[in-house]
Length: 98
Length: 252
Image: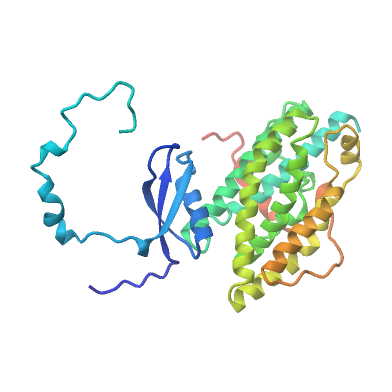
């Protein structure tokens, strides 16, 4: 595949935690020349409307992604194993965030 | 001057500073070096315009002549604006904007910390709220000063020039006159002269760690606080006030 030349600054992936105690969720990405700028840019882009209590930024090139061509091998075998799903239990009352 | 008149003028000065800098930063909208920075600068502009709205609303209340914050923004002439000269200076290149930001946010950091203890409850509450925003403005400006000062040869030169060029407008931040004197005695206004040494050491540290040279002491410009402005303010007002003056009472 031909490489596209990115003329912007390095790319960072942004993860936002909406409330304490729950996982950080991928929110998008930002360009920034260093980690401090990545954090402030992420703050300005993704938490302006009260979305977050914590931010993680990770250099995009540090993220190792699975190959779409491997989807069959990686994910299909899980399809017919319903016994792996905890659907035979009743959720306790008051359990949230599961 | 009655206490009411002084408090009106004091609040107006604070409000005009926020308004004019907020407008200046909003001019970066869609022109900043990259998208992320565009949002950062307009975000700061929004903080400032929000602050201006609150302060000018309060000023209008104090005045008690039935004017609103919009009247104060759109229906005053140049000589009636009381912002300091530093904040009406043009955005220039990006370095110019950063120099203006670092001088002002270092000052506001110290000012609002003191003002949050003011005996005027409204000003104290507003200062407490603004302090959080200003901490971020300072961080933003500080980080950029380091990057540009300690960056490439060109960014270093431009940053140095910006700091040097705007230095003569920093003296006005620490002036006081009759308005402040009366309110300082009441425990309402802040004696900014007492903030100068702390400001200077904060700025000197930032300049030095960005590998820049401290600007030479020289003549300080003055006048904005009493309505004597540089030619820049007229252009700002022309743009800011055009619509309400051309279409009075226009509504969204």
